[in-house]
Image (cartoon, rainbow, N blue to C red):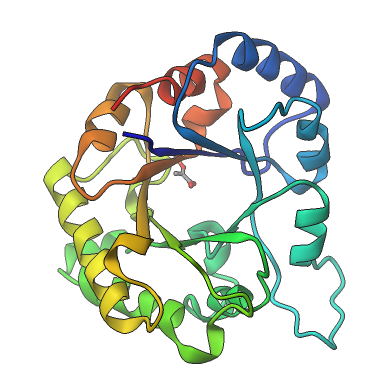
Amino acid sequence: MKKIIAANWKNNGSKKFIKDYFDYFLKNLVSNNEIIIFPPDLYIDKLNHYRDKDNFNLGGQNMTYVCDDVTQTSGHSSDMFIDNGCNYILVGHSEVRGQYTACNEAAKSLYVSNDLQVIFCIGESADAKKNGNTQNVLIKQLEDLCKKGNYPKVNPKKVIVAYEPVWAIGTGNIPKIDDISFIHRFIKTYVSENHPFLKEKDIMVLYGGSVSLKNAQDILSARYVDGVLIGGASLDAEEFTKICNLKI
Ligand code: PEP
């Protein structure tokens, strides 16, 4: 089954890193999965040189919510990402979510996402998990996704949510596989019941947080998991390519 395998490079990379990375990646990629790479904005266009038909997609790591008539220093619009070959955008990643009020500002950027396919990141903190508050926190974040004023101008045909427990990011710890399936199902049910356009089949949920070659097959084979969002392990060209090549 075709899965989404997404690489979030965060603020890593250089021109040399990119050359070495793609020397390996392009020679060894034999994948039917949908691959998305989110490089730092400054290198997005550089990656276009390595694209051939649909070998991988490009995305931006964050988009500032700017109303039509407002300008913002350091802002990036959806049109700029599209102009640079992107078809995806991450919004609300936990490492930038703190700059917003909950997911609300991130969700507002959906409204101006135009033709970009949004990947909306949610996830509970270690404290919320410890206190048994995971589902309440996720509902609060998903409410923003489903809020009327935040609907994109271009109605989405599908929505992609990345479930990334904050306590799993970069720690080497992951939830039990059954817990990942349980939460993914919960997300699909909540969104389909609260979003007017989207049915359960239109809602894809990726898992993110310490995905590696060791655990990727198990995670990708779990029920209700439509793909993975990978940080650290995506910086190793060999490990990432092997994950992309997995057959599920
Ligand atoms: C991330 O930050 O989106 C992420 C999933 O990181 P890591 O894979 O390193 O935990």
